[in-house]
Length: 121
Image (tube, rainbow, N blue to C red):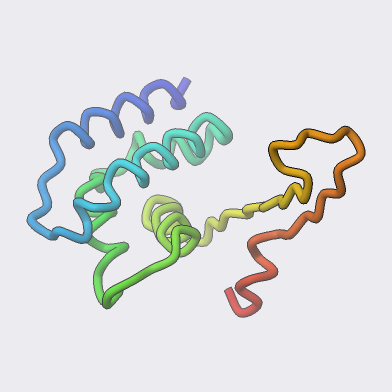
């Protein structure tokens, strides 16, 4: 129910993005795309997006406030979900395929949770 409404809201706000902040503008598409994925995953998160007066412009501006010259992708997405749903967190997993494009069926895969890279996060 809320998933489609939230995605439509985010798409509209992306088209109407109103921030003069270059950093906020630089992350707007990636943030919108990721928030839409999160809305697909969780109805309650989608509901929070639909029922707030907060906008994508506000979100991106807040995320980038005080970031200096860089910020990690994971930190951007964590701040985005917290902007709309206080206390929410995200989990990411990265995999390395040591065989890569050679595509051998016996390829060794090492899995790493992105949370392992940020022990205090």
